[in-house]
Length: 129
Image (cartoon, rainbow, N blue to C red; front, top):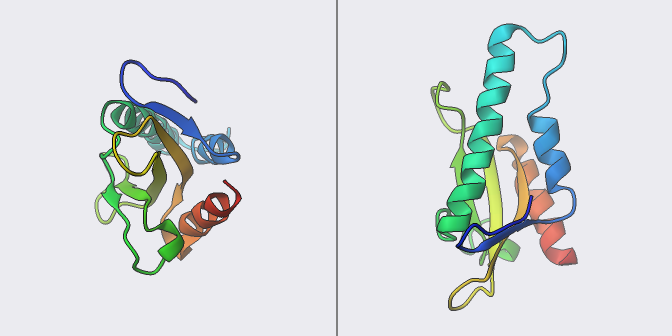
């Protein structure tokens, strides 16, 4: 993933593509409803990619809160349309440069909300960037 259809260039930190592949992988043992949910999740992530290209401010600014290292990053809470309840997934990204008009939207992590795993991965990648 990486490109720009006329907006901001969206790039991914090392490991993000693998996270997306893992989230959107169906196994032969999965039933039809599970495969449909995996496909819907794949489409939702693709939509987020396009949304970030056209509007780098699609996510909410994280602020200082529990993750001060991610204060200048943005977070999108998302799920498949058929899911009822709180969104189960997070996309965490950073616009670069952070001030002014961004030239790049850098995805730091995509994954489950549970256990703040996605936030921790984003923090690690933010430190190594």
